Amino acid sequence: MAVVKRVQAVPASQASFARILVGLGLSVLAGSGALAQSAEDDLAKKLANPVASLISVPFQWNYDGRIGPLDKGSRQTLNIQPVIPIPLNADWNLISRTIVPLIRQTDIFPGAGSQAGVGDIVQSLFLSPAAPTGGIIWGVGPIVLVPTGSERLLSGRQWAAGPTAVALSQSGPWTIGMLGNHLWSFAETRFDARRISATFLNPFVTYNAAGGWSFTLQTETTYDWVNRTWTVPVTASVAKLTKIGTQPVSFNLGLRYYASSPAGAAKGLGVRASMVFLFPT
Image (cartoon, rainbow, N blue to C red; front, top):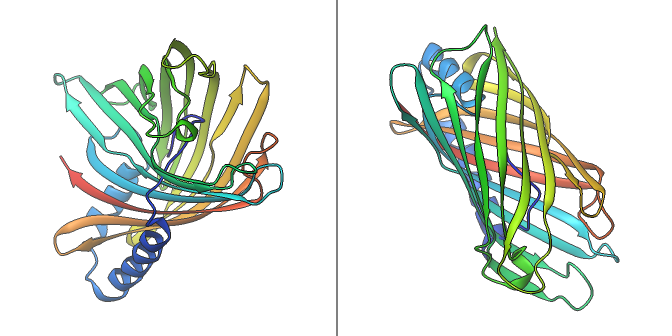
């Protein structure tokens, strides 16, 4: 699950990484022994919960095309997204969620050329009760956008912060929830920095099938209050939980369709592939 409209970034080796990721996933699924089914299904269900007591380190690769006024630009983004739960006491946990984007983009507007490097980092913290409240799992806290972009076209060059929250329900094989946040800019790092006021909404539905399989439908919608534009990518994905040796790993493959996007932004179909290392607490 991902967070916030932002400039994204990936290393020059992204296409190779994607091929390696998919190839490794297929070989592991074909050749390695599966987890015991009950433990496998339990881990898969925890993974569907953004504030579960589960350390996870996702490597999420995204490809988007048809960028720019001539639809000739493309962007590949590798999001490194460690999630670390910190027990505060018997009743409360603090969940740290970080997104570090690495990017390669080409021809995002005529004459732009290619850029590769680090994008702006997003850090979220959720204060979450250890037990559900009336059957609802929830968390609230702050979110901060840090202008770490290594190049001008990979960064908004602007600090931003605001509130974030998540709420979900898990019943049987189903997980249904919503993650959201709002970012306001508050400190320019350059005179030409762009003002930020953006709302991010991430409704999601996951069905956990037997054997560590799961199927997710979600949107990662952003409304830009400055430019009054919507970005609405809808993603459908399938994931399989397995093991590499003794290490639990989830492989995910999905397709994304932009139902709405501003002029010059990504359009049409995109691809997502991820590999998530899990460390049960």
